[in-house]
Image (tube, rainbow, N blue to C red; front, side, top):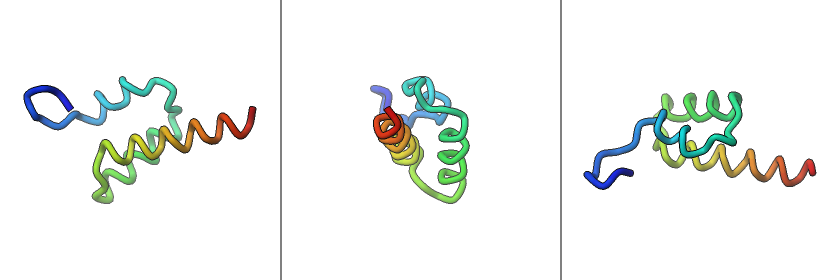
Length: 57
């Protein structure tokens, strides 16, 4: 969230998380279009991506 209190756009969220792959971005977009909070959807997908990467290494 920026200092003026406006909500971040999905594009701004994605820029903060460059490690999100395209599949994670698509899943987040689907969740957002289904009514989920954008920040929560992006954070959830980022968490799953990091957990998967840690498990596979």
